[in-house]
Image (tube, rainbow, N blue to C red; front, side):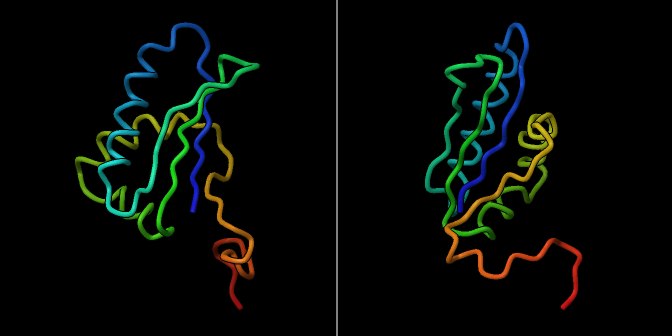
Length: 103
C-alpha cells in the first residue's frame, strides 16, 4: 500500500521541510513502514509530497496511534492538499466502495 500526501508550500519552505522530515522519520520508525521519503516537484517547486510504502493499510493507520504520533503527524498532514492519498495494486483493492456505504 502506498500513501501520497501532497502539499503546496509557497515561499520559504524551511519550516515545512523540518516538519515533513519529522513525519518521514516517524513513519520510518513505524511497524510495517517499508519506505518513506520527502520529495519536491521538478516542474513546480512549490509542490512537495510525502510518499510512503506500507506492508498493508492497517500498518499505515496504526502509525497514527498514540499521542506522540499525533503531535508529529497531524499538524503537518492536516495541511496536505485535500485529495485521496492511499493507493494499492489493483488486484489488492478488490471491490472499491466509498466509506459509509452498505452492502
